[in-house]
Length: 188
Image 1 (tube, rainbow, N blue to C red):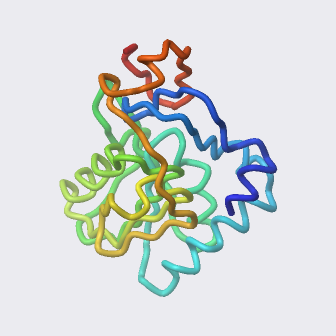
Image 2 (cartoon, rainbow, N blue to C red):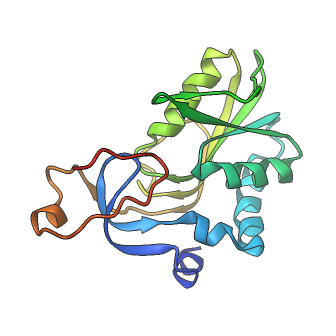
């Protein structure tokens, strides 16, 4: 999997502000992998195989990064796929999407660093009275340290160091920063 990220130019080196607000010298741009149907199918089949037979009724993803992965995982599982998105800074379910009490829901994300967006989606599931089946992702940058569900599966799990803006050595060196994530990040 790591080779696929490298050959598609999806593993970037530099100085990045992650969606979480943390800084890192590495960035996984999953969209560059997932734009290729053969990679999208292969990556999502690993997630779908893991959660197959677990009674998933709906796949939900945080917008925007998780939507493509969630849709393909849902297609492979043959279930409804929806997404949650931010409105006025809060994660919400909109566009006529709903979750019902006891509905069995799988959360799918592209990259997990701190798990903040996924945790917000899990709260939406709980507040609807639905049942969390598990969490799946393409990349877990925490190498398993961030555990969001009893059943948490990632296709690629590795530790990629990240820093608070205050402790970031790249900031201290004056290296220009890029913020390629999907959420508007506060400038640090």
